[in-house]
Length: 181
Image 1 (tube, helix red, strand yellow):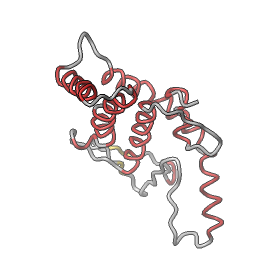
Image 2: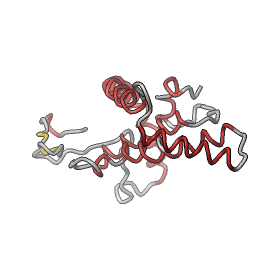
Image 3: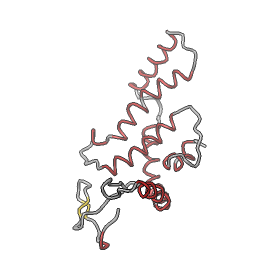
Image 4: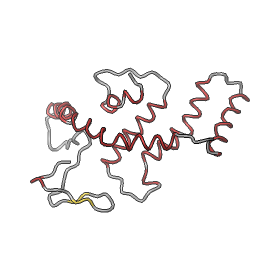
């Protein structure tokens, strides 16, 4: 966040930020106003410069929230003694459908299970906490939650991901955690 004259923002109980000089909030890349820069070369240069500038901030932010993200995933993915009855019923139903239709490929059943619970339910919950909780989801929060949800989807994938210098920063940032190397 960038504040003019080094004023501290006031964070209200619903998570909104209030400040006298209207703070500008950025998520990794500063939004570009087309009317602000008519020259396309300046826009390209701005998009290339900002990721390098904010790399340190990105890494420190990841370090700050990593414990909370880890705890969340540990909570939703840990099975105590038995699967919850609804999840066990769903997975048994998918296993039975595979047997009934002669599907021998374990990747197909894995895809069904991955798409049903983690990718359809939990990713939707991660990206849209406002569906369940009474919160104001700002565009910055939406962008951050989308990165976490995309990382979760990548971790559920069985395909091999190739990373390079042009890979998105969120994939590079979480490559070690999701075994995307």
